[in-house]
Image: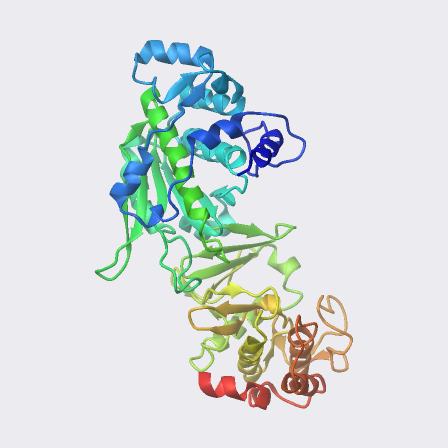
Length: 516
């Protein structure tokens, strides 16, 4: 990095340690925390997280130089109480000018070293680890890196409507370029540490969903288990033999946050974890779906979460928010009919969760778990040679629906996913489905992406789905459509073909004959 760029980033670096962001935020003041952290926290090798637990243990124990600054008043007390034991990892702001000017870093180190841990509840444990681990990562992510490696951090939130989701999500989650690279489990009492450790392998223990990046070996995941005042760091790796699974291996001692040496070691481990994550981020692939991230609609009525093996969708206040488009009984029927063996590979499926298959409605909250998990499409394939494959995938889903008398009613790229491991496209989101010929001439219709020619005399028919496919999938492309594609588009718009007949169109024939 040039001296000029480093200076510009230094001048732009925020003083506040809360929140995520780069060192180029708006409305900030000059600080030397960026410069100081640049010297003492160089990233580890990009391949370090593919290393052995012993190597990762050595990384977490690596010496940090220059030492972390701590306010003079805190340093005097600590050094008197612990003699020389804390001198090399810490330096008083009174002893070095550079330490004194790294104000935000010194303030945070002082807060960690002065922490008086609360005990007795998981909320207190979360408070302790939040200050020592999470806030450390947030500060480093904001001040150290010009392109912050950590893209998102979150904590689990209990809620009656999403109980299954909450049981499957870790207590703390940290993503790097879409991969769940660091997580934590917390328990109320120190005697429950073994329970927190066991949950490290039972809750979201892979960094990305199987099949999303099929040709890449995932790295290990970093993790911590905390109970009461005890904290320990782990790496979680795939077991290469014996039927798969994962194992959690300690990469630190058990650290007692009730003691100053324990807090200091936890702080140093957290700093070195940031170096591991930064090294990984320098060459990491972008994962399209973040495992465990809970995403809400703007009004909070809909939530989505990728869980191990499935995608969970929740609609609160179903009666007022969604039932006007289709009853719960209708949606149950749609998913049940699509679960027939002849349809399973053609369209998204509702999967078995806790012994229940299909959508469920409880306390006016609609929930459905969907599989397989794929890469969401934001538009047509980048390669025009892939377009017929994608369109054939959608038409296959429509043919399945139409054969049972249903229509999709929301055919567009946002409701299509790509399955990288299988190299095929799949139609998803059946929650706006209805029966062919349903009257859609009045409220709450039309849906947002319908055109003036979508309906047939006020009714939504099989032809309506196919017109949507033509308008949404074969119009407005970033490349020219060839003659075969133009011909198929025209026939779909004019209602000349059924979905099954469209799959036999010459433009799609090569793909459909090779894929079966």
